[in-house]
Length: 342
Length: 291
Image 1 (cartoon, chains in turn green, orange):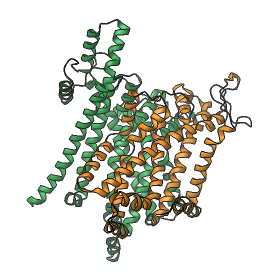
Image 2 (tube, each protein chain N blue to C red):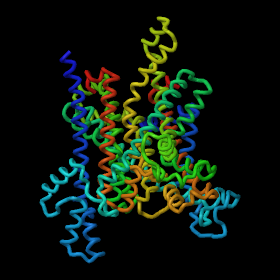
Image 3 (cartoon, rainbow over the protein chains, first blue to last red):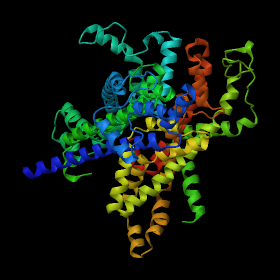
Image 4 (cartoon, chains in turn blue, brown):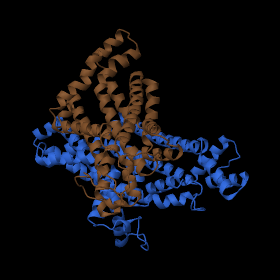
């Protein structure tokens, strides 16, 4: 028993080490992009201050140092250590444009909305997709299967931001079902957050178009993967044996076929999370849904480097954490991987 | 394998087999038509750049097959002239990704041990970093002055998933008898990888290249729509970006203006995916069990 436990903790331990190492590498990478790339933001900012406000080099440098919370006079290695220490404390510096606003504060205002909309979307899309995929597999060759598979194939080939624009045009502009420009932002002004019906209704209606976009763009992929995974499972010996044993159809469908067909899809789930979090930069910009993706797009467009750097880092960390959780979940669902490694 | 035989294997045989698969055939025909339209079309249809204020947002007519845009310019001419750059950048980026993926993936699988661990570790890490934000951030720093640069950046970030797939392919081929024989004959690692393993994966590599291209179209058009690709020119992505930033998409009559480039991109992506999916079915008959 203790040996099994050791292996289990080993697997989780390895995953945790990898997650932390990835965060560390990305943070380091960001530091060097900001500091060392030709035309890096600090040099640009110093140049701007000097030319626009007639500041002396020293003054401009001090102001830049304050913005990025980096001591520019220290040797690079020391700057790096300070940068990393600040990150650990959650100190990301101060925004360029809305001066004085700590970047960390901005992120805590944006991030929850992205996690909310992307999380709900994955839940809906995954559930619907695996149901449709299983149905298509069970009724393979039928009209239902053909129509579902064709639609799924088309949907999964369209870039998600184009689906977003299409939804915006069709639902918002041509049919006029949703007042698109009134639906910008994440929550209506004057509505207090809490577990009230008004608040929940409000945040869902505001997130409606982004959620629809994520769901429509990912559901095809889930349907197709679940269909082929189910078909593979249906051919397995244990399913034939279960049928021969005369087990009830529903038990075979859910406990034997469904559970095993689902397993391989979990690995795609982690990929999907990263992809959607990353793609949120476009989707949220299209709908002006003020989550972390919108913040990334806006900060890049305005060259607000401290915000941009922090937002990128946070998106990456969110994805890494999500992956880590998915890994843990997967090891619970499929005990084989704890023993066999990869 | 002789080169003629290789040409026959990757070009002719798939065509013969694909003509039996309906979806694949339609995908192939669409793909070919889009390529023809984008590369040959511009010689016949000149890009309409003349502003005609009396012809704004016209619906399709005999004169303007797809109608006109917010400045009275012919949309069809913009579609014909807008595909080339998108496809070239996608092809270059796909090629770079595939080259890196094939080299690293096969090296990793073939060498095994420590090399394998290191390469796969790097691959996993790059794979975890959300690609689009990284591209967007890089695009803000690197002055993207020309399409080649864009292709290089997209290509250099797009290889990890492919490398992993190639690695597992090589791992399975490695165990086959003829590789064993080559190893016994002591033909050398490079010879075995490049002359024995890779030619047997050519079909798979071609499929990977097309898939990498669709990925590159996604990133590329996404960057253009966000306004992060400053170089000038004319392409489908830019059409969408202009329609979006100038508010044309909020005007009911602009439907043909905004839909045309979207449909062009969607058709390209869909036909490429459908074509490769049926190629996959051909080269990997086990997948066909699912049909």
